[in-house]
Length: 633
Image (cartoon, rainbow, N blue to C red; front, side):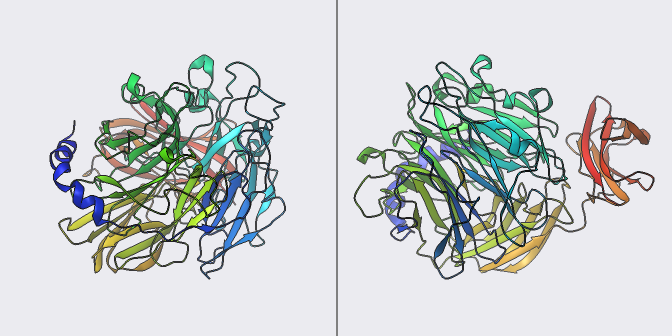
């Protein structure tokens, strides 16, 4: 048990009553977004038309009998309302029980949309089951277009349920992980998960388990049966690589997959596969709820077979050299009731400087209401349930108490406070925030050049004196393509700043390049937009020693004809750097010799090579790493 947890238990009784009544409901009553009571599944926020107002896409479809409904796209025009758009090919896809995720996969400055399409028919083993192709919508000046020539990502046919963008190899191009469901028929017929690598030319290639790891080897025979459950990308150990926590299904065990830039390896089996942790996880949400600089983990669980359905909160104490989580207990009813949880969202809904938690529950009786947990902040960070409009999820027609599915948060009216949309088995609901007098900052980030334009994977840290006993606080957000079960928060990082009158500093840690951009002495209550500075290459520096071997993405990428390759050595080593073409032929040995511990960089001039995809391999002692780059002339 950590010291922080011991402190929580010691002081919990003393402060519980004050916490319970100190914080009011931040939300107004529900606004009905669509009058149809057909089943909604997922919520995904993004400013798809680049007008400065966050829009939303809602997936629909019946998870029981396989009926198909029209998905929903709502355009935000800045008038405090969302207007439904019926766009052929975009809103009439067969999503059945899937989700959607926004991300700029081709780095053209327009955010694209990828939609999971589940199989036809009722849940297995009944009915005729026909898996569907997923839908990729390429965005541009003329709007969203159904892209059919993008390779495996639009050709592979599976029972897809949850999916999200993430740049696993830090090449500046978004890849996709898909958790697939159970294929029709009797018996334990589980489809493997899917992983699609972005080739950087507008196409994707599906990876095998030999290439990416057992994270996709998801079938009953190999005991990796997640059955279309929720998952979440996150650099949980702050080593610069995007990892994945994959939830379970049907009482199988959760798994944390650590990424080293070339593939995924399961870690912490004792933590996440112990006998008392077996449940059915539908929602996976990462967030730094205790403001200690790393991402903690909330799992929304349902009753499935003989499993309990209790929710789990894990505090992260991992570093680049150690990996450790412990399960937090003692937060009132968070892990002991409301046993049909699905959607979950971290967000500072009252702008007081710490993350609160919303949990959408799928039950339809009084024992399964949804819940909003407000964070006490300071040193205790206790999550306390409050009475809120979001409990019942009832839009006023009196039928059903909850039936919550995916949920996500965004500042819809640009007033500095987070609003909430909940998909449900019934009308999807919008809860507008009442607003507060507390300070805020909203930060948008964009990659430089032709890489990572949507900023997914970037870490944003804000330091400010939020007042009270907390004082100077350092908060962190990680830009992500999903939250909970089938949700995606706005890609703008939202920070509540309490009583702060000035922001001491903003730190933006860019994936791929590994660089950190710093901005200081900034006003509060502002919307900021930052583009990655031209600092991705690192000069030779043997005064700073990295903890582990690391190879950075070349910069610029794509390039013509010169680019920089940078790497870090924890110890002095014999180093070789080789260049290969797309078919694996070595075209040049760029360097071979001895290097001191520290950071190093070298230029690669491809003036004599033709345009195309190339690979560079950096070897140092027993370590090696291969990364992809693109030459465009």
